[in-house]
Length: 256
Ligand code: SAH
Image (cartoon, rainbow, N blue to C red):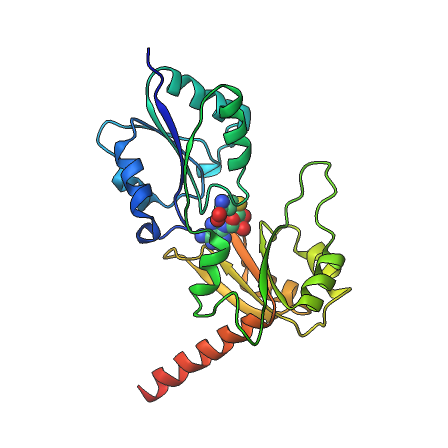
C-alpha cells in the first residue's frame, strides 16, 4: 500500500474567510480530517462530501483526545493511504503542539507538509483596529503562553515584564485567562499599573467580546465582563491604538 500524506493546516483564528487559499485546497483534497477544538465550523465547508471528519478537541464539554492517540490516528490513516489533514486553530506552529506532531510523524518516517494559518495573537488586536508594532510604540512582539507545561517552570512574568518594558515590546499572551492572577502579579513587579491591556475573546468570530483595560485593572475587568477562554491578552503601548480606534469609531457614529 502506498502511504498517503499528512498536511498540518492552520485554520486561522475562526473567521473562515481568514483561511489561506492553500489551506482551503488542502481541506478540499483530504479524505480524512482530524479537527482541533478551536477550529471555526465554516472552515469545514471546504471539505469534500464523504471526507471522514473526526473531532479530537474538547468540543461539547467532552474530554479531548490524548495527544498520543491523535498522533496514532494520523499514522494509521496515512499508512492506509489516506490523504490526511490535521486541522489546527490559528497557525499550526504557534503553540497548540504542532511541533510535537511533526516530530512524531518524522520519527515514523513521514514528512508532513505544513500550511501556515493566521495565528490568534496576530488577528486579535487587528479586529480592534490596532497594530502589534508601531514605530512610536513597540519595536517588536513576544508571543508567550500563560499555560505552563505540567510540572514545568512556566514563564517568569516579572522578568518578561521587565524585558518588554525596557525593550518596548508588545506582549501577546495565549492561554492566559486561568492564570491571569499570577500573570498580573508578575508583570506588575516590573510594569506600571497603568500599562494598557486588551483582552479579546473569540477573536474574529461572531461571538467575539473584548475589553480594553490596564494591568492594574485586569482582573476586575475580566470579572466584570465575564471574559473567558479562548482569549488573547495584549499588553503594551500599542493597545493605545485601540482606544484611538474606538474613540474614532464612536465619534464617527455620533457625527455620522
Ligand atoms: N495555534 C493557535 C493557538 C493554540 S493555543 C494559534 O495560532 O492561534 C490556544 C489558545 O489560542 C487559546 O487559549 C487562546 O489564547 C488562543 N486563541 C485561539 N483562537 C482564538 C480566538 N479566536 N480568539 C482569541 N484567542 C484565541
